[in-house]
Length: 108
Image (cartoon, rainbow, N blue to C red; front, side, top):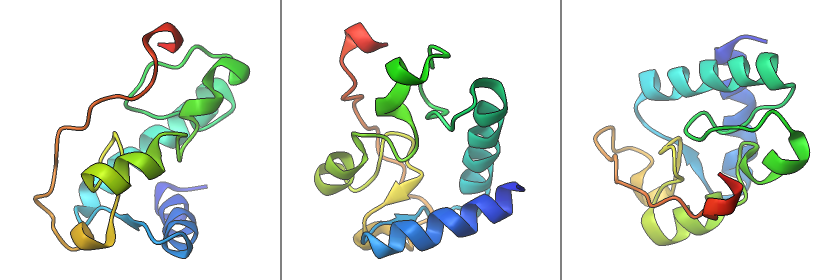
């Protein structure tokens, strides 16, 4: 699968849930490339913005879209990676808020 194919799949699934890919296409492409690298490395697409433990059971919460994504988008307009955003920010290429990581420290 190519990064562009992955983006198309994610876009379709995300929009069904009312969230959108960030408007900065280069940022999304970089994120998709890193998701695919993590899939090759670990066997699953762990969040490229967090350190994975190479253990799917320990990393279940950070498999994209991560367990924290919905709340981050609801409260701050974007997920931790600023890969997925709310409808309000879907066309804003400059929207890059600093999102606090909700993942508990003991899981990092």
